[in-house]
Length: 107
Figure 1 (cartoon, one colour):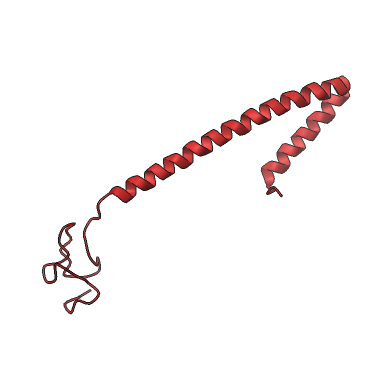
Figure 2: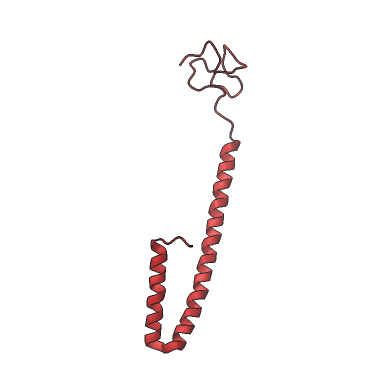
């Protein structure tokens, strides 16, 4: 079952209102012609919306990949006072790590 939101209700209301107006002004053939045109424009609008959505998703994925490729500022526990703040060496006291088990850990 489709999710019904505000825009869905508004669009459906406009379509029904448009069909009533066309029927009162042009009869059943006017309704048929108007329905065909509304369908064509609806399909084109939906297609364009899908294309824009796919582009936005691709851009977000590319951005996420670019962020993941960036090197970290520095290695190790950022809260430790002895951290070397270098992307190559963890700290001056215990350069090989790990920070969790280091007896010189200071905040």
